[in-house]
Amino acid sequence: AQKVTQAQTEISVVEKEDVTLDCVYETRDTTYYLFWYKQPPSGELVFLIRRNSFDEQNEISGRYSWNFQKSTSSFNFTITASQVVDSAVYFCALFTDSWGKLQFGAGTQVVVTP
Amino acid sequence: ETGVTQSPTHLIKTRGQQVTLRCSSQSGHNTVSWYQQALGQGPQFIFQYYREEENGRGNFPPRFSGLQFPNYSSELNVNALELDDSALYLCASSLPYQSGELFFGEGSRLTVL
Image (cartoon, rainbow over the protein chains, first blue to last red):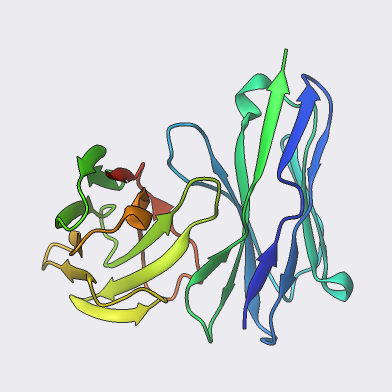
């Protein structure tokens, strides 16, 4: 069975602070993909990043960075120097070939105030 | 390139009624998935269509049904609506074998009274 846990329901920060979102996943598959999606108030889920299970290299893309650790089954996501436009719900998701569909976590609401 | 579009954006129904939601996939994408997102929760997979055939289904009763047309657009039909069906219904399109990279529409918000 696949499972994604986002323990943080809401994080509030002041603009320019960094925000780290936690994600823990469960799967028995050896090949899988992890995602972060952003959902602004408009409702549309916006794809942010994808990593496959064979690539634990952590990267930075603009103000986004992620920390993938297979040993702890975690895929954390950081927004550096947050901006008001970053206010949204962020979802971590897991895809495995055996399931063939995206399994989402419950989401973390990020509120950035000026 | 045209993104995923859904209609209607909002609608209100009463218990027992039937509803049809529509989705046009992104240009070139032949796979469409539907998700239900209840308030404060993550999206839950309903089913997926590939080449007009259902290609996987989540834990939803048979009163949730769908169609995919030759132009890859899709419909989600829900019969005998229940209060718990109130949710945001998201459509996503993709190419096959893209390992989960989905492109979502803005959703149809259904309220059942």
